[in-house]
Image 1: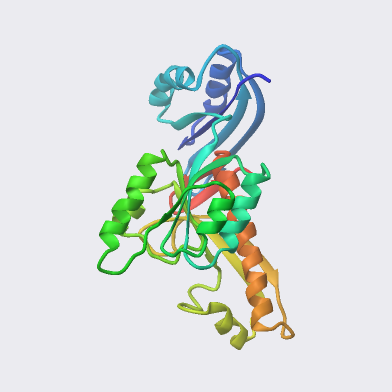
Image 2 (image 1 turned 90 degrees about the horizontal axis):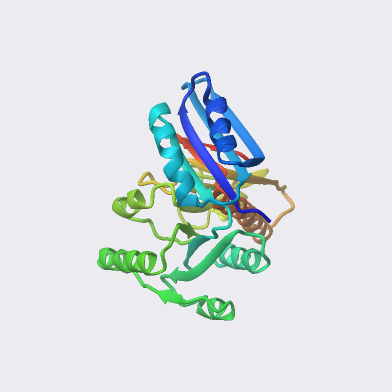
Length: 282
């Protein structure tokens, strides 16, 4: 197979964008395999993702050649080697359903990522990590040791050359500084009851209120807790006959589904930031 690349860009909308980009690809002997675009008329922003194949070049060469065009047209653009597997750090606390699901999907070849490390503030899943031959970093945390613990997280990110951080039910709030440093490359998952049912045991609260619909939200991490740009959401219908345990299990399923989709789309460079929202070329 010929080498494949992905070009993503966003810019203020104007005539000629598609012509200029496809012309560049033609000049470099590229064959377009997949193309998607979106014009957000509410803020006059244009978004594009093109996957193409090209021989006799490289990611860096294409980026260098495209840079003058991006500057001239004020593109926010990147070209990626599609064969690069996103190096992903998984972080977890005591609920392991999302961790287990992502590990299984990764091992089954369903996610285009590599997982060089797992971080947890508890020891519950060190054996699970060992079963996949993944280094496990136990980094306990208290209010007093949070700065030191996050410094160790930064060390893991640097040492393992991490591209993406997944909070797979990691029940600690990242500091504003770490959240900002990971902007656009950290994904969180939580139930979609917020802000109605805050705090501990949200499914118990939902059961007590007789909810008929439950869901999960996968979003980018920001220093505004649980308010980052949404990548994916999933829902499931429930009814009065379901116990708290059944409701919780259904919630875990939709959390796993929403998170896995978000990770896959991010790793395939299908998610572009649009202010407080995202454009997802599925």
